[in-house]
Length: 446
Image 1 (cartoon, one colour):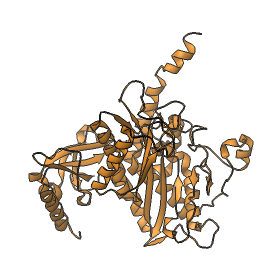
Image 2: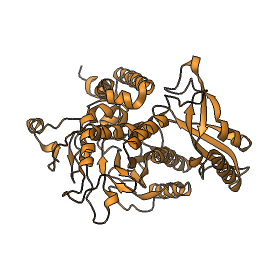
Image 3: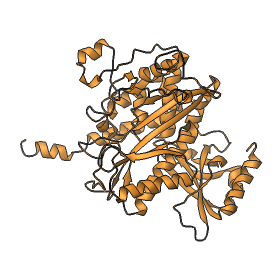
Image 4: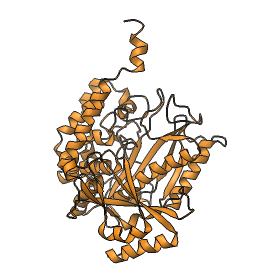
C-alpha cells in the first residue's frame, strides 16, 4: 500500500469482505496495558483519515487533565478480525493506533512512538531490527486465591488430552487466523506452564503481535472458564515465566550478525552489540522486568539469568548465542534472556536495541564468553572475571534506571519520568505490605 488513500481503501474492502460492524482501536499505556475503544464501520473511513479523538488524562503516563486531548490514528497494516468475538450482527476487527497530539505530531507518551524512534536510529545506521520473543505463561483454574494448575506436565511433556493442551492448540489456531505466524508451541518446565513462539519478524510488527498474543491467550482461557497469566513468578518453588528475546540486525537482506570467519560465526558488529547489552544491562532491567514480582523470578536455581555474562551454549548466562547451522546465515542471532512477558514489549524492544546500538556506535569491546556455569563460581572468581549482576529487586533496578542517560534518551523525557515515578510508587506500596511469609515466620515467635 503506497499511499494513504490505498491504505484506507484496503481496510474498507476488508471490513466489507468480513462483514465488520465494530472496529476496536488498540494502543498501550506506558506499562504495556492494552487500551481500546470501538468505532462503528460507518465511522471507519473518517477514523482512518483523521483519527479518533479521546481523553488521554486517565491513561497511565499519557497526559495531565489540562492537556488531555489526544488522537488515535489507526495503522491500516494492523487490521485484523477478532475470531473469538461473536459474528451475529457483524464481526469485530482491530487496528493498532499511533497516538498523536491535536496538531498531528506524535505524542511523547506513546510507547509505539518510542519504539519507532529507536527503530529510526537503527535505520539511520543502516539496520533493520528483527526479534523473536518466547513468551511463557501459566494456566490456572481461577484468577484469584491460591493458584490451581491445570496440569502437572514438565518441559516438552506430551500430556494426556486435557484442557491445557486444547487451550494451547486453540490459541495457536486463533493467532494464525489473525495473520500472526507461530513457529511452535510446547509445555514448559513448571506445572501448567506453556510457551508459544512467534515467528521472527521486524520489531514493530512483533510488539503489536506480542500485545495481541497476550490477549488471545487470555481470551481463549477465559472462553473455557480458566485463567491465563503472564505474571513472572506465580508459583513458589517453580520456574517463573520469561520472555527470552532472540534478536539480530540486518543490512538489506544480509544478516549483519553473521560472519563466515569466526568459530561461532558472530561478526565483530554482533560482538559490539552484545557488549552494549552487557554494559547497559543493569540500567534497562527496570523496563524489561518492570514489576516487584519480576525479581522473584531473577534468582539462582530456576534457569533465569542474574549475571552479566554471555556464552555460546550455556543457558545460565544473560546472553546466549544459539548454535549456527550451515546454510542458515540469516538465522544467526543472540538471545537476551532477562525480560519477562509482563513487560511493555514496545519499550523493552526499544531499550534492548538502544543498548546494542550503543555498543556498535561507541565500539564497545566484548568480554570473552563464559562457558562455565556462572552460578557455581565463587564471588571472588566472578569479580576477577568482571562479571556483574542484574539488580536484585525493583528498587535497585529503578535506581539504576534513574541514573541512565541511555534510558532517558531512548524513552524520551516524558515516558522516562512517568515510568520512574510509577516504579517508585509501586516499590513504596510493596514495602508497606505485611506478607504471609512475615506472618508465618515472625508472628508465632516474636
